[in-house]
Length: 107
Image (cartoon, rainbow, N blue to C red; front, side, top):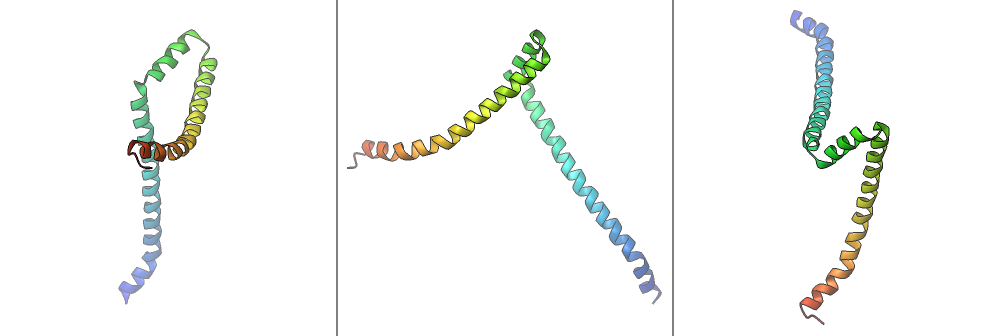
């Protein structure tokens, strides 16, 4: 009976501690994932020629102008990529079957 009373008194504290540890572990996993992602992207982009071009331009021109130019180029390339990603499959889907049929000499 004494063991049961002890368990009933301690159980809420144990449950709270376990829940807090799980929350802390989740936060550690989330933040470590973000930090690892940033580290990998930084390491791979550091030697990219775009990085060098931006650094060289920043030595010649005002930093704000270079910064805005880089963001504008990123936005433009993202837009072009999205448009090409939407158009190319529809063009390939319309042209490819007819081209393949001609190559295979199918009427």
